[in-house]
Image 1 (cartoon, rainbow, N blue to C red):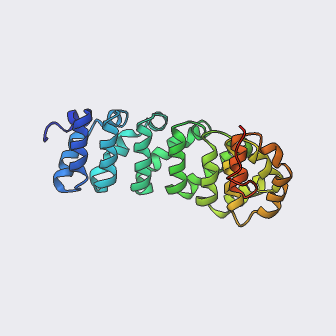
Image 2: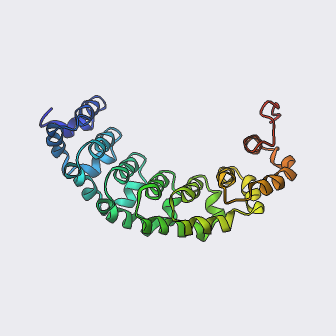
Image 3: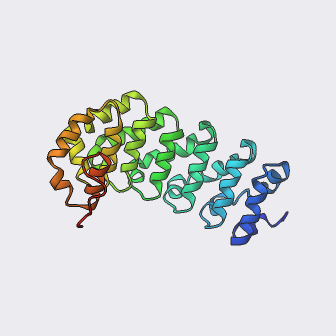
Length: 248
């Protein structure tokens, strides 16, 4: 395989062979990874090569994988919005120290509003909330808090509100609970397709008056039961028997 790593990485069968070697995490594996130097960006966007780059990041030492982050600098937003390359950013955030990824995250947060609502980039935003520096998490949280209901009811951004409740500092969590955690707000979220998932997360939070919220939701049960999503929500909060046959 030596001398053919880059070619194999772009091939369906070959990329599996390269991954198998990289998973060993040996000195030989690290030596083979050097053949990808100068190709990290193209590999990240390749349907096969992206898996190879992910293995470099997850199985090799920082000394052997740092080149990936370095070669993606200047293209972070483009990478985050790419269906394959976004996975590489997620792995970097999971496995590399924050000083290695900080420049990439700074790039991304220049376009935080659009990326929070993007179908692929939202996965990267989730990874920042899970693994990033507190200052970077706060930047994402501040953006979400600028229009919390819109983000909470968005197809892609709704996931991020749940992450804020788990991974951000208490101040950001309390701010989100203040804006969305009142019973009336939980009800309005429950009425929407994607906001209902945020409503579930809020009801699981001990800082939310879930009993009062559920009492209010119960008074609007008939309205919620008119949609399949609403029925599922009612089942999850114990207001509808899951054995009751849906007429939808």
